[in-house]
Image 1: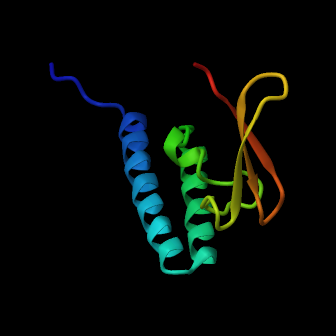
Image 2 (image 1 turned 90 degrees about the vertical axis):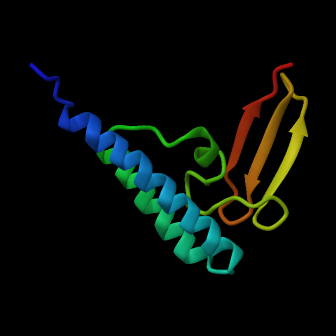
Length: 107
């Protein structure tokens, strides 16, 4: 008997490919000066990931603001600072909505 792949596994693989395609298109839209289109594409990518119960890849998740959905470009629409409050961390502030994301820096 041959093994069949489950439809859920196929759906997740397809969703990962679609999310990557939307990410590439959103980066092109940002470079051409159309942030609203990039925001819509990232909203669609997040919905695809939610529907298939998969996580967005880390390299995408760290570059998208969770509250307003815009792609974060340092120096353009976000501010990046290294802070030393309790522990050393990177603070990324979205200049569109003001949300701050913190990432621990471990040596």
